[in-house]
Length: 257
Ligand SMILES: Nc1ncnc2c1ncn2[C@@H]1O[C@H](COP(=O)(O)OP(=O)(O)OP(=O)(O)O)[C@@H](O)[C@H]1O
Ligand SMILES: [Mg+2]
Image (cartoon, rainbow, N blue to C red):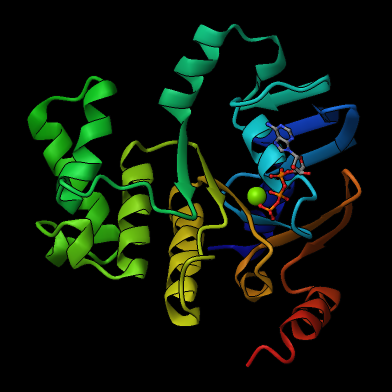
C-alpha cells in the first residue's frame, strides 16, 4: 500500500468520539467535587487511545460519559456523529446496544456459562438468530485465540483468558466503539500485555475506536495515543512513536521490573 495515501487518509479521518468542554461534579454531603472541568477530547477510529491519570482523577467518570452511561453537567458529547447530550434515555440505550462494547477490570462473566455461551447471550438482544449468534461468537473467540476454550466455564480459565472472553463478547457485537476500564488491573504482566495487544489489534483490524482508561503505566507502550488526565482536564496528549512518549513510558515503568 502507498504510505503517503495511508497517511493522507489518517489525517482526513473524522473523530469517532468527541467531548467539548464537558464538566461534571458530584455532591458528597456538603462538599462538591468537580471531577471534569471543561474537558475537551477528540478520539479517532482504528486507534487504541489510552487515558491515564492518578486514582480518583475521573477516568471512569469520563469513560461512562463518553459511552452515554452518565450525563454531563455542561458541554457536549458527540459519538459517531450523534449528540449523546441531546439523546433521550431510550435513544441512549439503543446507541449503546448497537454501537458499544465494554470490557471491565472484573471480567463480568457468568459463572454458570461456557465461554461460547457468554458471548452468544448478548447477541440475541441484537436480533441475531441462534445459528448466527453461534457462528459470530465462535469467530470472536477464535480471533482472541480462545477457539479451543469455547466449552470451558470461567472457573476453568485463567484471569487473562477470562478477560479475552470478555473482549470477544464485546467484539462479537461488531461495535464501532469499545470502552475498556482498567482491563489489565487484575492481571499479571504477561496476561495484561496479551490483553492490551488484543485490544490494539481489534482497533487496527476492524477500524474500531478502542478507548481504554488505566493507571497502569505498562500499557503506555501498547497504545497509539496516550492522554494524561489530571485536575479535571487532559493535560498532555502523546502519539506513539514520538520520542516524548517513549521517554514517559521509560520513566513510568522504571523500577517496576
Ligand atoms: N456516583 C458518584 N457519586 C459521588 N462521587 C463520585 C461518583 N462517581 C465518582 N465519584 C467521585 O469522583 C471522583 C472521580 O472518580 P472516578 O471513579 O471517575 O476516578 P478514576 O480516575 O476512575 O479512579 P480510579 O483510578 O481509582 O479508578 C472520585 O473522587 C470519586 O469518589
Ligand atoms: Mg476508575
